[in-house]
Image (cartoon, rainbow, N blue to C red; front, top):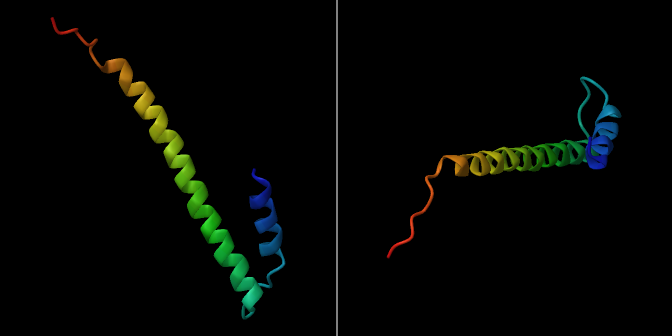
Length: 66
């Protein structure tokens, strides 16, 4: 787990359940959502990269033109 992820989790753990959120708590939540979106995108890019690498195995060899 990334250190930023751990930091956001610690921040979110300080929030009180069923209480109105302060501006700082809203900021924590917005940071958490942004981090999750970025983290998810990075993970999807890694998967896509693996698919592209794997797909090259199925390309027929290139024949040189004479």
